[in-house]
Image (cartoon, rainbow, N blue to C red; front, top):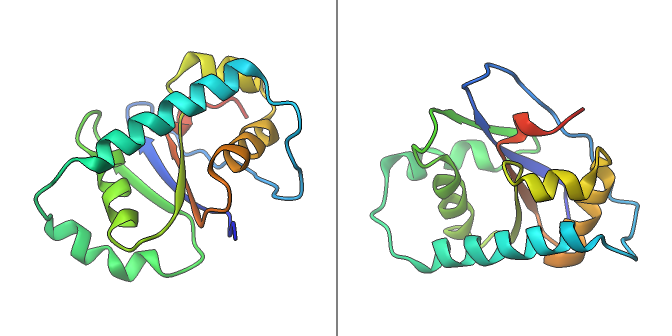
Length: 143
């Protein structure tokens, strides 16, 4: 069952904090092709990353105290430092089902065209019931 907790990977380059309002009452019926293709490609990328083997990081063990609450989680760091991979592994190690949207993808941004509900509906249609959603590069989302 989708709890709609958010795990947000935020790029600190712009120094902005963003929050995406979501609503789990809508069901997607006619998903835009651009949006669907983008999210399916990102799902393949996520699955490919998760299939690799990694060395355990101390941060993964320390994160346990933060993962088990209803608060929004924000991972902050410079570009290309492994924030997304850290989030993926954190959830994978705990057998938590999650969805992923990389908002650096211009086609994804075009596909939602400012309607954030379309994004959450599409994620639910593609991933099914999940406990978490990772929004990567969320500062690129127009509010």
